[in-house]
Amino acid sequence: MKKKIRTPYFEIGTKNYIYGDRVLEYALAADKAAEKYDIDVLFICPAVEIRRVVENTKNLIVLAPYMDTLRPGRGMADILPEALKAAGAEGVVVNHCEKPMSLPQIKATIDRANELDMLVFACADSVAETKAIAELHPDIINPEPSELIGGTGGGVSDMGYVMEVIREIRKIDDKILIEQAAGITNGQQVYDFIMAGSEAAGAASGIMNADDPIAMIDEMIGAVRRAKDDLGTRGDIYAEQ
Image (cartoon, rainbow, N blue to C red; front, side):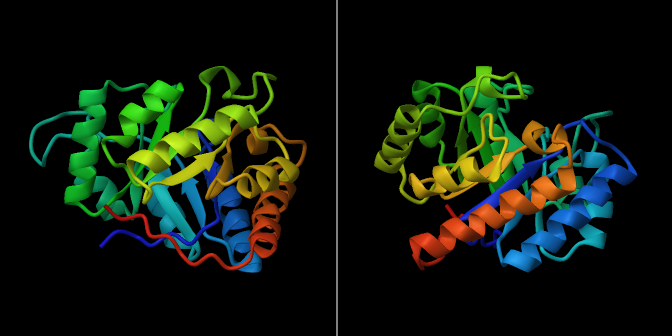
């Protein structure tokens, strides 16, 4: 059975801003904040760091940033889904703008993830791409205009875009969890997106490039708690097909 995600939740992506011991340092900070605020936190880190993060934390839902669709056997250098699962990954990201995939690749990866009861965290750019990916029924969709990703200074997603993608995803599959993450650099933005109807918010460069990343992790996860309290109890949503 796939991991249950309580909403609203928060997502942290390390990308390759950090590596080695620094990944574990940030994971431990996220783990502490997840417990402090009683909020589910998705932690996306490089495949080589997954096992150590999983073995040293207790409150994080750890996802891999990518996987291939091969099966055990030949495939030198490919990332084997079963190996990620064995390392402790609860899910995988597909179609991030820094690792784009075709729709057939996305579908094949979703199918493999479903075989292993792994969550699928799908990224999308335009409203049209969001709708196409929603038809493939991933567990989570993170719609974010590519030009806003990576601390480029373009700000956060426009609320008109946010409301449109939420509406379009809901029409196709109201079980899909919807996250907003593009350009987020502070807790207030996290709060605003969740209050606007997203089940979650997330950040990568907004944390990794902060003056004090550890403090920013706490600030952003605390903002999710504040939004949850202000929204009241809406019940858990399960990331299941």
